[in-house]
Amino acid sequence: MPHTLFRKLLYRIFFNGEDPAEARTNRQRRAWAEEKRQVLEWRPNPLPKNRLNISQDLLASPSTASQTCALLSLPLELRQRIYEIALGERILTLSNEYGMIRIHETLPLHCVTWDSRGPHRNLNEETADLESESGHPTFKLLLSCRQIYVEAIGILYSTNIFSLDSPLMLVYLKDLRFLPQRFQAIKHLSISWTYMTDPAHYHGSIHEPYDWATWEHFWSIIAYDMQLVSLNASIGYMGDRQGLNMTGDWVKPMLAVKGLRRTNICISWLNTVFTSELQPDLASGLEASMMRV
Image (cartoon, rainbow, N blue to C red; front, side, top):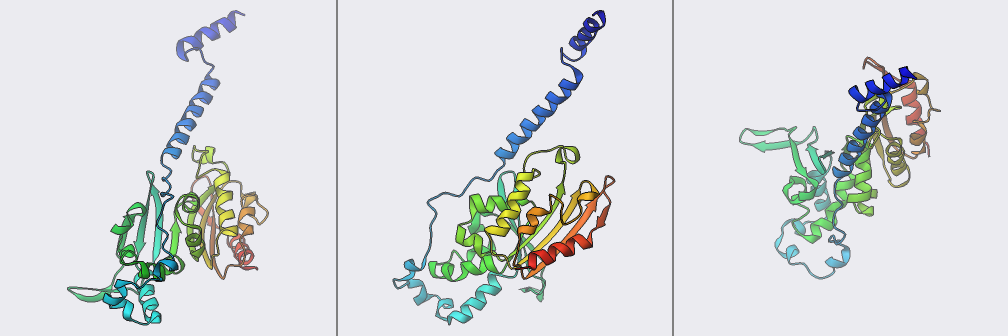
């Protein structure tokens, strides 16, 4: 009894009356609550519901643009090729920066541009916010007139590689950003991510994008809501090495993806000292599974 009273007195003096273990748990809960608040605060806002939906019906009436624009006087096949050169064959890297989706556009390796020095290969990167499409060089052509938008918008989605820095970005695009027909038009996707079996241990976080629900939802979207042609995935795995097989729980969501034409999967095991070890057998097994119809 005296020992118990003495211990309570120490707790009152040094820990404000809390048990040290309970104090640590309460601090962790407060930290996670603050983290969840920031996650919700930094989620991008959805685009307005009253978005302009340009359809073929709007083009039924004669357009004054077709009478004055030299581009629209060309045959459709030539215009489509011009759209492909101007809008396609790029890597569009999408990232979430404090609640705003930013697009980093990398020109293709074979792209040749002109300046005062003459023609040369260009690897410049253009950056813009998804909310301010008019400020991005790629979107200016689309905003020139309705007919060009309708003819070219599909090329923007179907010929570029959409590169994501987080599984949560795909959830944002599907639930908050892209119209369903635009989302399904995406044919090429790239993702680089580290999966943690115990994110609270490795990262100190348990909320999106590190939670299991986000990981499962990400692969469910690819499997059931998209019509991808190619997928590049570089995935680091932090956890028990016994989970590095086709029957691992974290692998099962990926097995739902079928019917791809091209896949490039890289799986690496990250141990506790942050050195990586490639897992070619698991990667080749996933590639074969994803290309199976």
